[in-house]
Length: 279
Image (cartoon, rainbow, N blue to C red; front, side, top):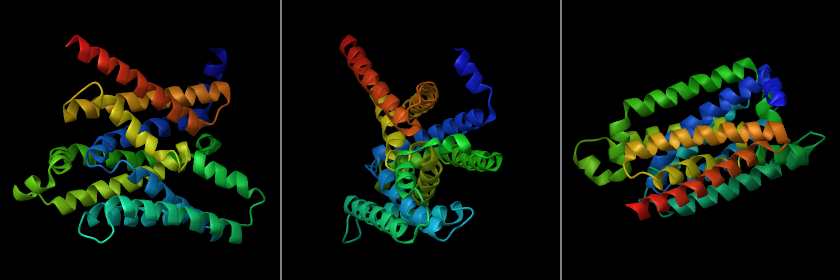
């Protein structure tokens, strides 16, 4: 406990916890929508896009790689979520192609042009998360706070429309809802969350933040609102627990958070069966 309190008294740990909670909150809000729309894997695809963009930004020596990574990831998210079934390459195949292609090109670019003395360490940190979450500046925390507030406000304001588009796009369109516009909102929010989460869990583990809390909540509740609220609580709790365990045990932050999410899912699955049996 003394060791934990010592860590919590340090500003860099406080910054990391704040950013971790914000990312967990945002990813869980949108996770339910993505899971129900059968786009669970899009987080993984977009994270690889962000990795490729980050590699290019590193080669160009950009002081703020967010200026390149964010626009590229948003554009790819829009293309993936808005093409639907009207293209020759369907959604799952498009995600797989972009995921593998950008990951390969990103690593290739870093190998050819990078001047880093520890390329393997840089790549591993980007893919699986690292201590970068513990080196956040005040400006980076404020940027994350601002973007997170925008995501939460947009979700709350358009909750009913997003709910309608999630369950039945055809019916929502017949009722006068601009389905394309709200799919665009989902795409942009997804891209923002993916870029924010890269420092927390790394590009290969981001989809876990989106999928696990939503699936865990679905084991316990049936309504969209209840699942969303439960997903938010579980995601924030698992992220906090994972970060604290990582600090105390010295394990990788991203992997510890994802492992905690997986254990929470197993517990919810068991509890869901227990509750169902009693009913």
